[in-house]
View 1 (cartoon, one colour):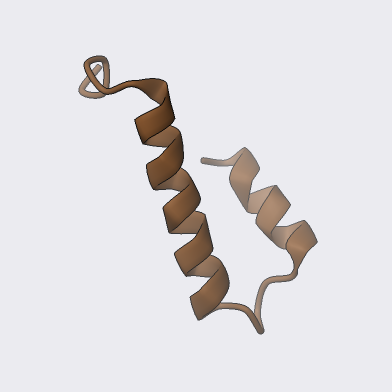
View 2: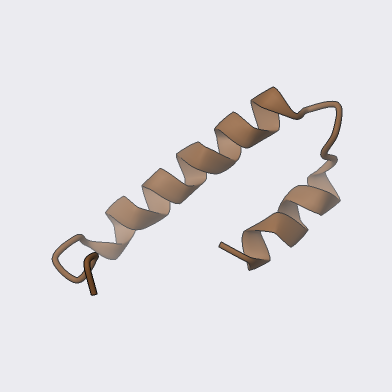
Length: 42
């Protein structure tokens, strides 16, 4: 409920930025498929 005043698109943007950072940092550890799996848990 902390996020109730934050528009969904803002939250989505933050999550997308986080995924991009994860991809950059772990590009050798994660392939595209594992990133898609990771998104399921966010």
